[in-house]
Length: 294
Image 1 (cartoon, rainbow, N blue to C red):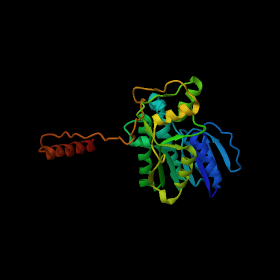
Image 2 (tube, helix red, strand yellow):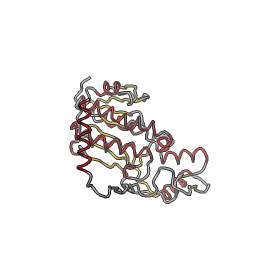
Image 3 (tube, rainbow, N blue to C red):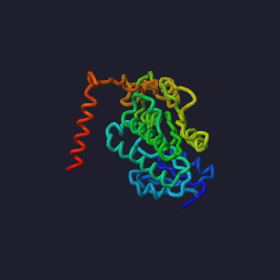
Image 4 (cartoon, rainbow, N blue to C red):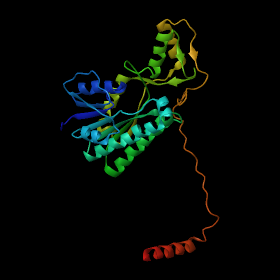
């Protein structure tokens, strides 16, 4: 189906995807949602394809006729990725390459890739490494096939519709069930929260050529101390029990600063001298000549 303003969202049934679809419809785009499960949205300009990004044939068929491709699909939970590194590679890396291949084939105007601020961190586990790999492949596809992109590194997104594993939702959900406020990280933690609706609106801005072939950080406008958040929730929810924190940073997560990635330093090993280079080269020539004769 060829439409001048057709956008396909991979992973559109997820938390951020639902907000993205809503904003795209408001902007008069025709939206195709490609996901494993359908959402109860009923728009005239919205269609659904059930599928998995690991299936190239389905991905290719879905992308045909699109102008823009937005990739929100994949394993995004740090804990899950730590437990399932192989599945994280298959979905987040190979699935992304399937999308890139189809984008290349149909000469998509731009591919928007949902990455994470964790690529700039020493934390994030296999989730971070898979997203970083995706970014590198996207940049290489631009270099080799002139496939335009925008990489978006999202910060801490919150809002209605998030799963119970989402940062703020996790805290509130636990308090409603257990009558206590518990944070699984330390009280020193700081985050820059951004509502999913704002994240979706800002993502749509990157469809502009102004943001082509760039990495964009989408995050909150100010830093929030988790201690202050917990105190606010305690008062708002009327919790009487003492606030509960962990004594250590949650596995795979950063505490205060996500920008902590450091490259491994190289050490070089060399032979003591290179006097045998020509001698070895002569041996190689003789070997290849003998191989050719056989």
